Image (cartoon, rainbow, N blue to C red; front, top):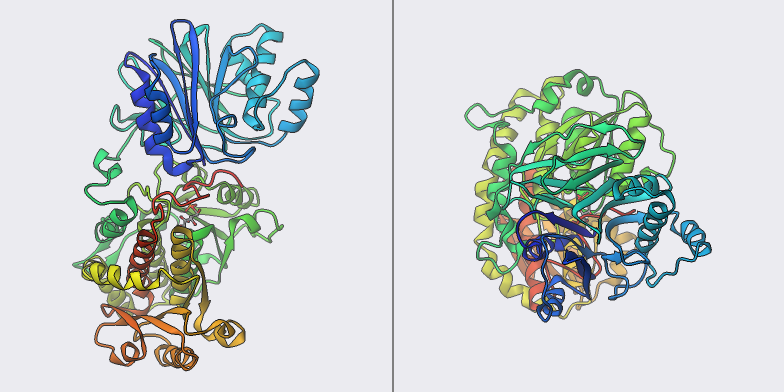
Length: 613
Ligand code: F6R
């Protein structure tokens, strides 16, 4: 949450910073701001709302400077308005700061600073930090990087910050703890950002700043890194694999629909080099390197949030079915605080698209401290979670920019399915015949998704019928219960229609009371698993005049005839249905939200990367 960008070099900073903010806007869009040093002046411009508002505001100003920092905010402390927007000046207006994270002890620090005569214009924790840096700098008569270091030693919380100083137009000092920070190394220029997306068009050389590290970017000099406890670090330069076209809409009206349509490719990418379609064989290096641990595991704990947690539930069904290892699926935010029992021979699998979710990161740290083996499933390469795990698998879905997760979800399910199959095969709990059959079917999934995507226009048509709805219910059983949860989450987060997912058989235990002829009920009813039982559940809803929207297997006329609308998916193995059934649910949520005029890529109150707990 919150995106930060910085630039120092020979180019004008403003266009680079603005473009960077647009790339990072998925991280928060409550306000945006920019600070530049030019002609001995440190100018701050900020506006409530999206980056577009900042551009409009800045248009009337003459913005110059080859050094600057910029911020797009997801509000934590203080309402989203111009005063609380970053960058924040220090009292003397000599320094300016941008910050992603939360300073937990800001109230105590603020009181201390007030006693020293400091006053505050915003309600933010960030303003407290910049005043503290100024106070430390003045009282200790030290340079900016030392002041940042001394100040951060007094801070409890999470941060990625960048600070500039009016009288030092050749230096940016940045630091991180718990929030991400990447430095791009160009020719005589440096970029810094919350992730690599603002950097990629200028350089593919990046340094991921580590926990509690402070980086000093000085014009014409080497990058310098020290820890907050003053240990010098050698910067490790990495090469970015991302491409620019992955960050653009490529002719689609929104990133979300582009990402839904990318799924045949992203799933092929997830399987590339792992699923051998000729031999129907799976190779996962993360598994091979840790085979004994997986084969001897008494228990697996999956920890994740939101959509990733839904993927984890599907993973549980597959691992328990094929590998016969008990799996617990935990919300990271609960797991990290509720004193869970973790054994040394447990395998803990954090799942995260961003690799930065604060609660999942904390869950990883907790499990690590208790000696468990941590196997991460993440999308963003080099993010904090994969850097903190013992081993793992990247999902390779490419950058996901729409705030609602789509292609990352199906990639997570794909990786979990591959893992379940390979453990099952190696343990002997899954027959060779089943293994070959399911692996073969897995290889066919991308083409089957292509086939489903052809129904986009008709889904867009019937979606219009449902914009009246205030509520939706999603039902599924077995592997499709988590799909029902995910379908409901997609709809509520982008269309603001209240939606609930349930195991279909749970309806009778209460929720069926909600059914009226106004209530749309989405039922995932493929002709595998508990098909007949789901048909009975549909009858029960039909008898109460609910509107049925069903996801059925091609050729199924029984459920189609019971439904007001039905969308068909190709036949596949039961464990693979979620990879197909998720697609029409994503499309339906997207089209309902578009017809309702909602901002599908940046839904209200949300941000993509939840780096605060
Ligand atoms: C919903 C969505 C969120 C994320 C959740 C976890 O569409 O995107 O529910 O799944 O915030 O994020 P990651 O996977 O980055 O840890």
